[in-house]
Length: 435
Image (spheres, rainbow, N blue to C red):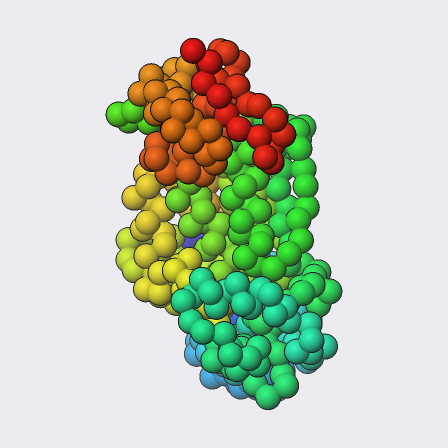
């Protein structure tokens, strides 16, 4: 039998490597909460055995007890593998972060690396059951929170604005004079002043991967609401939009469903790991759109689970609650199902440090849009102008049951075809129908 190392299993040729083994125990516990180490097996998986004396297992147990904090109680046994005597240590624990020889480690593939201060902070907050977004931003003051942004939010939520502090208290974004991280991210005048990693990087590539040259690349700053809107706008500007005619009216058709990718953008900002100092990335390739955010799935979650079940576990409960109040997200974890229902070929992936959503781009977007203004709408516009030469574009859009953007486009075409004319300045002028 040939053994193999992985994230949960470590192989050591000799008990002289016990210190490295103890470090591996702490790293595996911090990543997976359980695992095993076998002494007496080489890196290539071949068993060579170890010498086991009367006190060997006891000495191993004592060394683990002396050098790992918090304490764990592993099962240490002799095990015969390919007729060789080996020592197997099986362990588990839920009191992370664990320290070995005074340092904290994390498992990456089959290696152990020292945790960064930010990673350690995340573990400690997790242990105390305090989400990062609920923690206080020590440098932020009430004056750093925008009245204007808060008033706009309250209006969207359909509630009455009282005072800044009372609204923030109702949203649980402030306690006393302490401002939460979530408050700064959502309503800060300059969020990047406190969290420089709260930004958005967007890029368009000429090929199918990042090895190809990029056509456009921009970094954006702002609060969470601003960045969500910026990401949506960037995608619409750099992907194709076709159209089809339904009845008398034109309907724009993006090559990727707008609701689907907007939901993915919102999920990225809502569920990202804000302890990681990396931006959210929007990458547009020739064949796909990728939305990537820092932060893997929460412990216990898998791609299969989030795509087949309603999962309501939230990494940032305060941010999620604020977004939910204005219906940007569903409270009971239906976002992934919504995306899949709108874009069946969407792909979700998780890898070291990131979660990624990939939408394939359509090769053929419907483009059956007539070059001229539909006859019925042209007649409506002409009649409206005859009735009221000073009619506004908004009024035309309402009567024609379409958008101002569509009316502006129609007017430009009708002017070019010499069917209508604009007389006088933009303000104070009027329309005329050319018979």
